[in-house]
Amino acid sequence: MKFAPALRAMANERRLQILEWLRDPRKHFREQADGDLVEDGVCGLLIAEKLGVSAPTVSEHMRVLTAAKLVRAKRIKQWTMYKRNETAIAAIKRSIQNGL
Image (cartoon, rainbow, N blue to C red):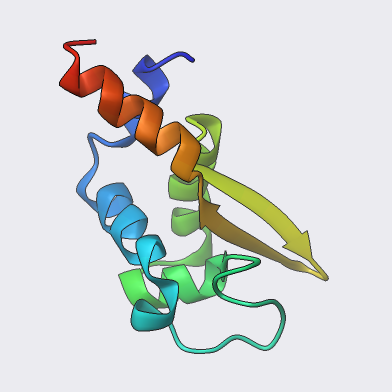
C-alpha cells in the first residue's frame, strides 16, 4: 500500500474531522432517505451540511480521501455514500507505529 496519498489526505483538519465523524455515523449524522448510515455510508450532502461547506468542496475532500483509500464510495440512486475503509486505516496506523 502506498502511504504518501494517505498521509497527504490526513494532513487536512477537515478531512480528519470527516474521518472521525464516519467512525460513528449514527452519532454524527441525521438519518438519510436512501441507504443505511453504517452499512452503506453517509451521503456526501450530509457531510457537506455538517462541515458547513458546499457540495463541490466536500466532493473534493472526499475525492482525496477516496484516492488515498481511507474511505470507500458507493452510489445509491443519485447519491454517493462514503464509509471508512477500516482495513486501510489500520494498515496506516501500524506503519506509523512501526516507524513507516
